[in-house]
Structure formats: structure tokens, C-alpha cells
Length: 452
Image (cartoon, rainbow, N blue to C red):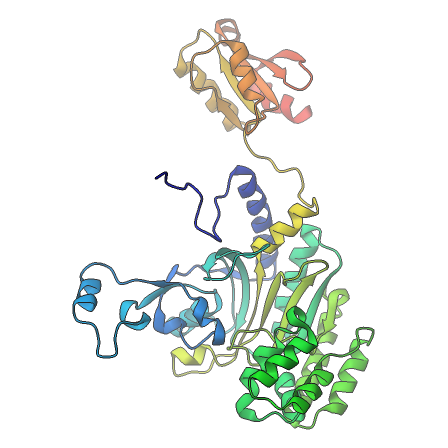
């Protein structure tokens, strides 16, 4: 039977054009994040399972576990535990699920980090999710986080940085959606839902945009919540679309029946005032139905949504208790993650990429000269800043130029090097699109290409 050469479901190969686009986006992300004072961090692809478990709520089922290897696996299989073989018996490591929990582990591990640690991290994560449009099992996240402060300036900074990235990439018409976990909990209590059911209610509310009000009502009642309470909760959180943020916050403050919820409203009001003086201001919208599924969020939460795209392209929030799970000290933190893959999908569909430099500017074609001489000329041209590919085999000149113009190469120029050119210290430069050619000294080739 033939072996399939396709990559595993939900994972991809990245060909040169794909990588040129990815590198373009990542370079913009890195430049913007560093302008905000964030410093880079990388963590291992593999984490101990105990680091990841208990942090993601229902999403924990999507964690990719790594099977024991070698002798440890043989020992478990030979003498299975009394309760039988299960995931915990067969695995104690897993691929990282996101970049936030590894950051929390790093903060707990290294005491020499700054009190206000501003880090960015651009690395792949893995989730055993159902693949879909812009949704993969291996994908990159571009995170910014600030730890060590409860100041709402931190929320404003991470949101503004993300919006600056999107503006630089050419996005328009996107929305920065803001909500607060304590506001959601206050609305749940105001609706008459028991404290013990808060978690399950949040999980259902998080699906509102996907399954609608009727679907969420059905799910809430199916989870054991009274239908009247479910209906009231949806009336509280699903506000009229044409309502201004100020009116929306005023209405929420009136409707709430607990102090924590009202305090959350005032925090959101303060964040919107801070964001109003940043690039995020025109895009900001208070969205009471925004829930964010991850279990570690404790305060303000946010997502960035793009028109006509069903999933968000960024999300984050405050997680003041997560670092404390790994140590004795409480470290407040807030962060936001840009989803690189979804950004790439949108940019490709909407033709947002600039012309990206990739491949050779010049194909160095040669006839009747020694290969060492060809490489010496190539070295001089590269030192002058020219992207040069050397045709690797002796061949007729026509064949070399045909290859230079072939798909996947598409050099703009051919530089022809024969015995006469070598003796004169020149190349015969041929522009492949127009067919025009001229003799140019080696030292002047880079300037000639720049002028053309």
C-alpha cells in the first residue's frame, strides 16, 4: 500500500511563499511589540502534564499528551495500576496548549525577572481540535503579557499593541470586544443562577455567537439551570447592537444586583477611557456576552473580531491567580494572544500582502568558466547586497535562462558570465521581462539593479 505524503490532519507544510508571508507578519508583530518595551521569551514545546492540567476547563480534553517512551512504557504495560490503564498512567508530558501557562511557570521559576515583566512570545502550540477554516491543530500564537501589576494600564498596553499590529498589517473594520469575568459572574447571580453553576453557565454563554439564544437556552436548561433564570441571563447579556458603550455600561450597572459586578462595570469604563487615547480607541466595543472559554481568567477579557470571519483573531484577559498555582506568591498578570494562522488566512483572502522579496534577484548563468570563478563572482555580488542564485550545473545558456524564469524561481535578472566577461570584470545583465541587456562591471551590478 502506498504511503500517504499528506501531513497529519490539521497540520501543514509551509512552502516558500507561505513562509515569506508568515515572516512578514511576524516581523511586524515583533517590531511593534518591541516598540512597546516587550522582551522576547521562548519555552519548550513539551511541558509536564501537571503544569497544564487544571488550567483550561473543558478544553483540557484537547491537550496532546506524549506517550511514555522505552522502559517506562514497558513497565506500565507490564504492571498496570490497580485502576487500569488511563491517560495519567501512560503519559506525564504533553505538548504546550498555549503560551500563557508556560509563562506563568517561568515567572514562578525565575526570581530574577523584573517586577513588571513585559514579555512577547511567538511560538507554535498544539490542540487536538477539529480542523476548520483558519483553525489548525498546530498553530502559532503571538503573545504579549505584563505581569506584576493590577493597574489597568496593563490592559490598555496589551490591547493597544495588538491593534497597532493590525493597523500596520492593513486591517480595517475590526472590533476589540471587551468584557469582564466578574461582570459575567454578577449577571449570572443577578439572573438567579446558583454560585455552583457559574462555571457551567459561562461555558454555555461562550457559545452564544455559534448556536444563538435558543441554543444557549437549551444548553443551559440541559445543564440543570432553571429556564426562567436562563432566559433572564440572556436578556441581561445580549444587549441591543445599536446601544452605545456608555449606555450599555450604565444599563448594566442598573441591572446588576451585586457589588462585584458593579465594580467590574467601573473597571471596564476606566479601560475604555484609557484605550480612547490609543490606536485601539476607534475599535473598542463593550460586549457583555463575551465569555472566553479558558478557566484561568479573573478580570477583564477581550477578543478581536474581523467582519465576515466566524472566529476571533486575538483574545486574552487578566489572570491574577495563575502564577500562584506554581508557587507561594500571587503575581497579577494580563495578556493578549494574536492568532497568526487566522491573520494569514484573512490577509490572503483579501489580498493584503505587499510584494515580498523572496528567491533570487539574479540568476548567475555561466559558460566555459571554472566553477570556482563563478562562486567568487557570486560572493562579490552577495557582499554588495544582491540576492544571487548560481545555476549549479554546466548547461546551455538558454536552458539556464529558462530555469531562471520558471515558476518557483522567477529571478528578475540573469547575469551571464563567460570567459570574455570574466576577463573584463563584467557581467552581461539581462532583464528577463523586457529582454534588454547590457554589460556592467561587477562592482556596479548592485547599483544597476537598484536603479532598474
